[in-house]
Length: 210
Image (cartoon, rainbow, N blue to C red; front, side, top):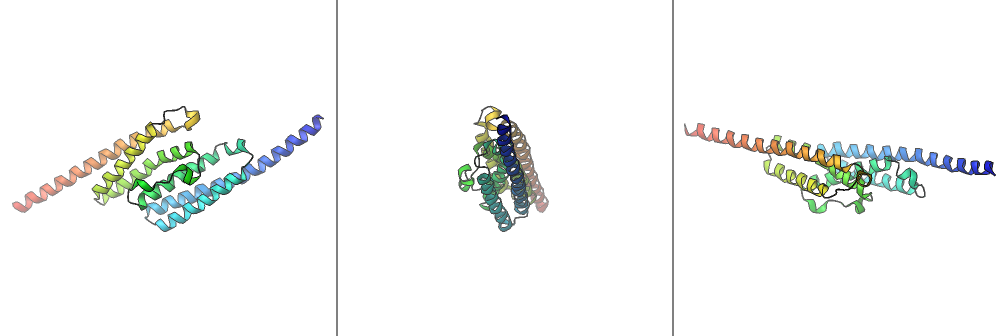
């Protein structure tokens, strides 16, 4: 009897191990596509970014289908990580493509991801938007920089509302704290750049009158 039980358990574990290995492979594929999309976005290649995001979305659906009936593996951590990466790049894509219009930001249900993974991905969006704001400052597009700074602040305000244990939010509190620090630095960069530009214009105006 014990031997039969052992055989059934071993067979179950063999199946789980195979599915886990397949899941890890698909998860790496999702992360790779998301990073490709992220690099493309910073180069303003929205077509390439969109294609990679679509590929990541298809892989994510395949991952979820493969793990049906194996919730223990599904919640092992690597699926959540791939969902975070996917959420982050999909949101950044929406914001950059629509030039800061938050109305079309995809929801977790539209992306097919868990809520905690979505919120953590949203937290990572703040860092990506900081990079975009710094690019806008270098281009002296100060009005656009202020728009995206406002989006960063709105994201942080949303994250602050989810004051739940880490067991539920999966470490969201730490990302919320990091986002606040990034926003403070970015606000300082924007304000200093605008003031510097105003000073430069004032100096030029003074020289022209002399």
